Length: 322
Image (tube, rainbow, N blue to C red; front, side, top):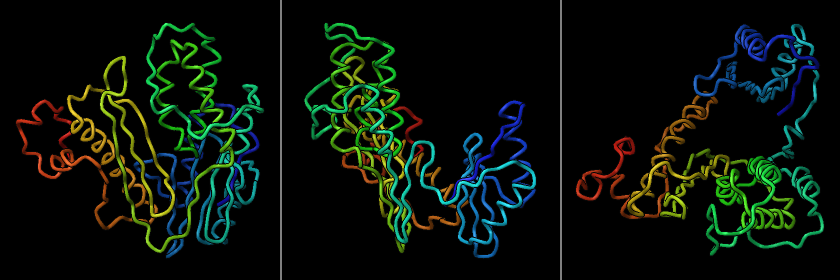
C-alpha cells in the first residue's frame, strides 16, 4: 500500500481536477466502481491494482510491485506527482504494515487533541462515558463557549475514524453542538480523559484464510430524553478487526424495543448490501449470505417472517424491504 500525491493542483475547480484524473485512469484501463466513485480497479490476469482518490491525494494498492511501478510512471507522464513510498501516514491516520497484519491508529492526532485543549496532564478514566448519565438539551446548567465545544466535538469525530470505542458517546454529544452547557462540556472532556489513557489504541487487521463479511447491530430504546428517539449502532468485520461502524439517532420514534432493533437491523442490511458490491469490485465477492447478528428475539422473528401484522402494522413500510 503506497501513497502518491501531486505537487501542484490544477488552477481550475476541483471538479475539473477530478475529471482529468478520471479520464486518465480510465484510459489506463481502470474500472471505476459504480458504488464508490473515487475507487478504481484494474484486473490483469490474477493481479489486481486498486486506486483510491481523496481530493488530490492518491492511494495505490496492488498485488504486483511491477504493476505499481508501471502505474507510477504512467501518472508521471501526465501529472507532476510526488512518490511518498510505502504508506505510513495518511490524513492523520498512522499505518503500520507488517507481513501478516496492518495496524491503523491516530496516536499523534490523539496527543494533539490533548495538547489543544490543555489536558495533557489530566487524570485518566476507564470508560468514555458514565453509563448512568443521560444528557439533555437543557438541564439548568450554565452555557459554555459554543465555538470551543464544536471544535472539541469536531476533533473527536475525526478520531472515530480508527476509534469505534468512542463513536457512541461522540454521536450523542454532537446533538448538543448548538446548545452546549457545562454538563455537555464535562461529558466531552471525560472522553478526552479516556483518550489520555488509551491514546495508542487503534484497529488491527490480521491476515485471514477466509474473508467472510459479518455484521452486528444493536439499539437502545428511547435513549434520547428530549425526543424519545432511539440510537442505532452497527459494525462489520471480515474476520479480523472491525472496518465499518456507525452510531446515530434514529429518524423515527420506536414504539417498542423490537421496532428499534428492527430499524437498526434494516440499516445494517443496507450497509451490508453496499459493502458486498464494493467487495465484488475488489475480487472479494461474498458468495455466501451475510449474517447480521441481532440480540432481540422479537426483531429476529419479524425479520425472518414479517407476518405479525398486529404487532408490526405501525412500522414504517420502508423497513420491511429486508
